[in-house]
Length: 292
Image (tube, rainbow, N blue to C red; front, side, top):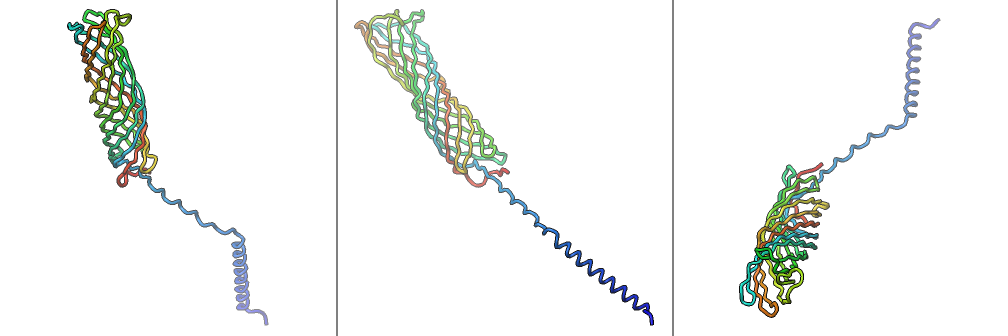
């Protein structure tokens, strides 16, 4: 008895099942031969914002140099041998230079727009010295006496407003306000009589000194670097100007044995330029505008 149609069908199903099993085994083997898949890299952590905070009180110190220029004019009156002599006039200019150093304190406020406004007061002890020579003459133009003057600025100070723009931790600013300085002069006569400034008759006279503390104005600017959260370093230029202040000088002496008494009233204008560097400690308050 030959194979039936059912037997043929069973044989076909068995063959198909075997083919599927062999294919599955081959697929698994091929998968085992592939290299393992790597996990995707982790995203970098977000960059923390940097806070540059200029708001708060600060205190610090400074050191630098100063250059002074003074123009003066004077009128001298007095007596010689008991008789009044004609008025004598003089004009001169002098220069001085030296070092200075001191301290400052102030307050900053930083706006959201990164503008920084503030106020600062400082005082510097100075050693700015110089000398000059000048001769006095009558209204007719006759030279009557000559003298040497030694000048000195020994301290100065300012009270100023400040306005700047913060580029992160760098502040560019302008500044201006009130200024004062203590200025002293010592004047010594070097010759007396129509022969000045050449030969003259013998004379002896005292050295006359005068000092004043004029007030004026100042303006300048600088750059400041916030190099640590609470520490800044700066470089600064200031011009100080003192207009129309006065000093009086009195002289007593003898010329060929006759007494000389003279009083000189001087009007002065002084310009001072200073360049200095400074370091501040900033007591900053809270978070400032965020820079990314």
